[in-house]
Length: 101
Image (cartoon, rainbow, N blue to C red; front, side, top):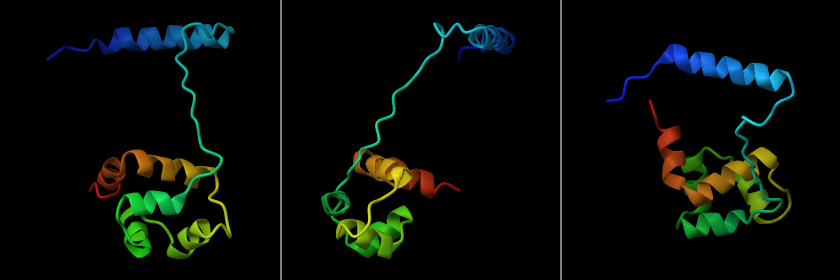
């Protein structure tokens, strides 16, 4: 097991913060998050082989909201679209996170 030098990591983090505060972003790590503008909720649910109530119970969603999304009466907000995208790509991770004690 590798031993971590916490003081060295803190000093490095402080140096990065100071550089950033002075306008130097060259050492920053950035990520681009892509949230789809449109998402087919029914396709996601059907790909998992779940009924609407099962899908909602499993992922903590409101049945009426999912019904409205599937029937295009409403559009999921940005956070819901991001959540649905995660469900689409890794439903097991979502379930594990939601069922963790």
